[in-house]
Amino acid sequence: MATQQLEGKDADARTDIFALGEVIYEMSTARPAFSGKSRASLIAAILTSDPPPITQLPAADPADVGASGQKMPGQRS
Image 1 (cartoon, helix red, strand yellow):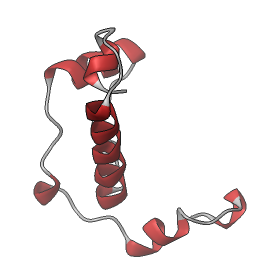
Image 2 (cartoon, helix red, strand yellow):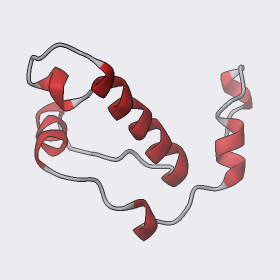
Image 3 (tube, rainbow, N blue to C red):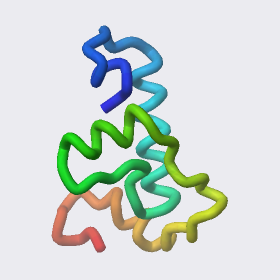
Image 4 (tube, rainbow, N blue to C red):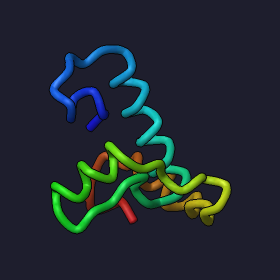
């Protein structure tokens, strides 16, 4: 969820850009940009921190990325 939404503001184009960035980050690294042990800590991480730079993380396995597009969940890695 984008920071604007977490702060109770209206969603706009920036919300979509944030979401796209999250999807690209996770597809590129096979891990979410933000994490937390609870919803509250996840929200705090989104509001107060930056994700680790993609260049400092191992790349996702291309087979995993390709399998994510499978329509049947049983065919996904």
